[in-house]
Length: 95
Image (cartoon, rainbow, N blue to C red; front, side):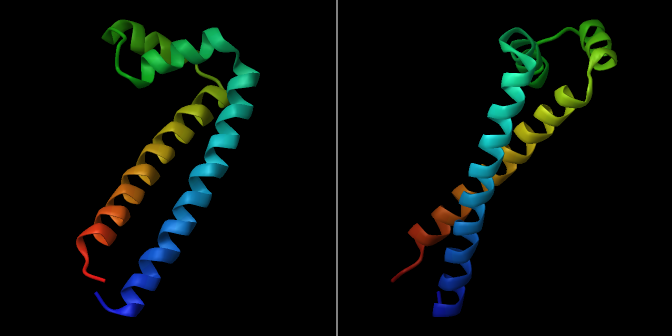
């Protein structure tokens, strides 16, 4: 891997880390607004633990903050997977 590629991956890793930290702060803010009980319900929904009927009902009851928290979880998951890939690329490349 050439120096430009390493620099690009390093910059990407830094940006990913910053984005993940920002989302963690947003998640904390929203979870405090929603309360523990609602966050637990959203987690069940997110982890696909609801029956089909319960999921349909749950979707109808979701408000802006519920959807925003789900969006944050989704985005965080994608960013973490990308960050792992960047780390693996660094580990596989010769110095």
